Image (tube, rainbow, N blue to C red; front, top):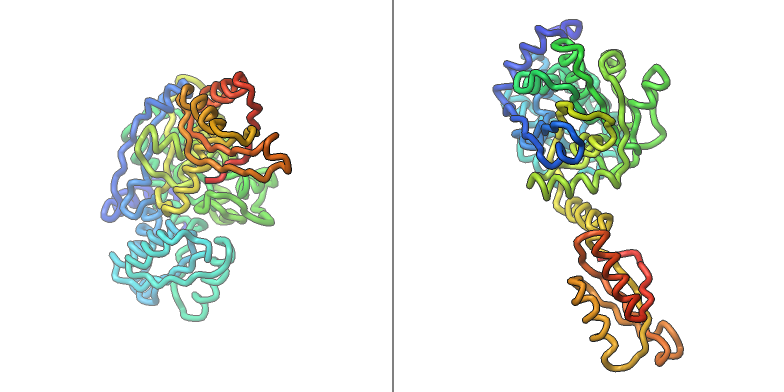
Length: 408
């Protein structure tokens, strides 16, 4: 199918039927927690529960369906930070094609291994997506492979837009759809179809502040390349948005919100504790963005784009999140080096229901040990108010606790 026919209602309908062969229809999940927090009716579009753990299978599968048998026979190649890689690998296997995937060397191991598990050949190259993409183009030229772009392709964007078809079918009166933005393929597909079906729906793109290439491009009025992309949201760490899709994005996106990495850490804990779901950092952009929307009593859908997060990253995010929320903190107290002082401090903390995780007793903080030794205590608390209560109780007992940087 020629690209001119893409991103039309007919193409979206065809894509919706096509992707059913490979993708799951992910149902909306009503969030009581985020609805109460924001004063809106918030629904989650859980693409983290998709077959490959992300929405990317939609665009990849539809794109491959539009290729000629000759193009498929040459073998497929793409570049991806992980989720598109799995989508192409899965779709290529379904169509019986060879697939070569170039991934940045920094890609989480879970994404590399999953991609290999679908039968694809994985090449690790470069630090960010853009460097991997350049290498993939070189390999495509060298070996004659058919290149499947992760976002700057109208057919791929049409496949991603099938998400909007499902949302509107299930929630016809949706007011806002929040969509993560990396290169812009997902947001282009979702916004274009949503506006075709109902121009009143507001589509908000959400980017990591450390890689806000689409926001910069919209402000410039043309595609620009950022000097770097620095964010924990690896799936959206893109320096240059798609030039082919940019005009559609410009036309159909109502606004862009940028999110700091710290907000994603809080959103991860919110999602795990309140919805028992693992969502990767890029997928959490739309959850973090809920607090930035100055609206009430609206029906809002947050697209959770994926859930492919490796366990080491997860552990790090949880740890930082607990520290950020004052659920874990470290204090230093100076006390005389005499028997019973440690017990006294511990009993003050115990009375306030603080839970000691780690103790570090430094006798060499001062040359006069009788005057002072340092006790560093890492504690678990219920949150900021509880932390303040523990510190106040120690102060009332004559100690002068000093907050320290926590490292577990």
